[in-house]
Length: 296
Image 1 (cartoon, helix red, strand yellow):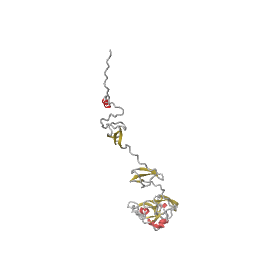
Image 2: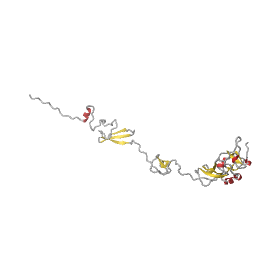
Image 3: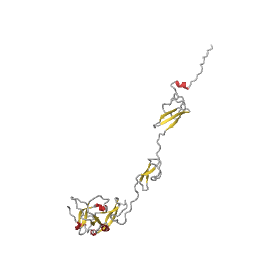
């Protein structure tokens, strides 16, 4: 017997949309299932990934909390607007040390260099100009005078203390001449040195301050200071005395004796007293009997 053939069913076409509705919307190559009906994906898409709604614009926040825009162009996501996530590199310092007050490009730029004396020095760009920081002095101080300066002579600031020798009855003895910054004058600093026999009494012969100064650092012009009742007495009168301090009478010229008195230190630091506010200073001085004082 001849069997009947089965009737063939009409062919049908499975569309993409229909396939997506089947089996849980399986994604096909080239498709982005996150776009439904022309809406923006919940998650930020990858650049160049596919999309199905041209001219669709979506806004997201990137990993640096900056807004970033995506647009669907020709079926692919393109970045529309993006802010840089990395801060720009700081302006570079000039290779050569800039001149102070010369122009600079970016404020708050801080640069460090080494000056000609191998000292660190800084520059900061402020208001469009390089501002130089504190600078260490690299210039050596002025040299000490060859000859011993007179007490009270003018000196160059920064010289410091210079060592000299002065002639006494005991021979040459060391003496320091210090340049006092307050008034830029030389002041003698006589060391506490004693000898036997004691120095001559030439100082006592000077009647004026000028005569006393002409005798050199061996002598000093002293003025009575302010003494109180409980302390040593004030020097009895102005006069020229040996500069070397004394401990006892053996260190004094013949006919004089060592006495602890109060003198005016302002005369030693400044002849007019303009830079001195002190009133009395205790010191030991070789005085003649006529200049002797008594306490009380």
